[in-house]
Length: 109
Image 1: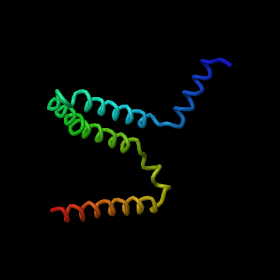
Image 2: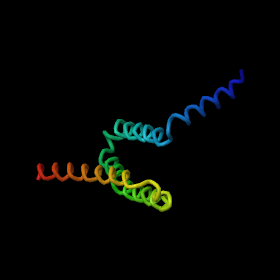
Image 3: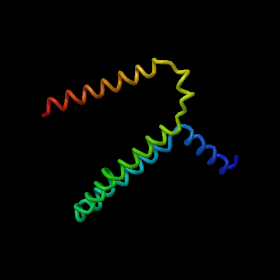
């Protein structure tokens, strides 16, 4: 049995069952935890400013870019045969989340 072929086969199996965003999420979580542990004591203010920049400012642009990419890659012809039921489920979900958010915000305020 060739060890290199087994390694490549194992990597293909890993890539098949584990999505890349999950690996990136775990990696970023480890990076953040390491930063909290190592830099949190001496460089707390600088670390917080950096995390706020990445978490607040950069994430807005990344989310906007991702949503635009999804929207631009969706063709109208693929939506024509779907019917009204998926749109009704989406609207119901949006109304549920929006209503829950409004209710919680009303209770807090």
